[in-house]
Length: 391
Image (cartoon, rainbow, N blue to C red; front, side, top):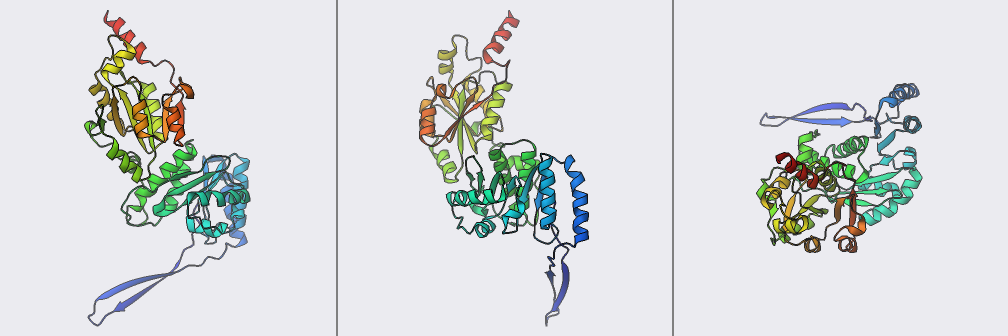
């Protein structure tokens, strides 16, 4: 729902002494609150539609359409129906939006509303605590243009994502794009961090276009997975190869690097689920791949079925994978030590204590993520069945 008023437009023509014509458009806006009758018509129209909605989005431009009464009635009715509400607020009185799920002010709006400097993620997180209590909301997202976005969740962790590198052409509508991407992601049951990263990518696409622009699924995918178009060999690092340059560039950009590993002898849906979940938890995913000699030591005679180059190329062809690093050792401990990933991912058939390298990652402030495995999928069982079929 957008709150905008039709501006009064004046067209003024200037004629120079050389008789060339120039046009100037000047708009005067009227931001008076809607009359009581109009206000009631809005409420009567909105409330019956809420049951059909997956999520409710209020974009308050403070032009008079979204009055305090319209906002209150909408949020209260949505909450009774169990619907989440996202608000892009313009009022400095955040209590107007009390009960919304998420507020998405920009840094200037947030700083003025909270009377804080809001110049660092830590400062934003501190100021957001009181603001969220005042607004009784679950989370607060503060957009900061080229400085990225900071998401503060009540009873949760604060997450900051840097702005993705892009040549900015026009920032018009960037806030609307963020709110829309968040709404779509949360309506699809994405978690807070995933929704935040989708919104950041969508904003990067939008500001790279001239004027208020839409974002297509293909554009969003390319922004989230910028290496998807690379040929496989550009993603593969041989055993003992240098990851330093690539890691340094990703660190310079403030990107969150994730890591997972395995033999991946015959890629199956269980592998794909883990890889997809791993990529969703980070900005760049490195997959450690056991070399042929390493697989033979771990799995026994007759393994691997495919050599390391074939396995690496299959992994590198996946959009979720940004880099494949082959290692000769039985475990990827040396790789993890060198990479120091922000998130270390393994299948849920492991416990946190069993995950190789967990202590290294946690010592640097990273996290270990265990992904539920898909039952019925195992490379060992697939190989056994295939060999029985040949017999």
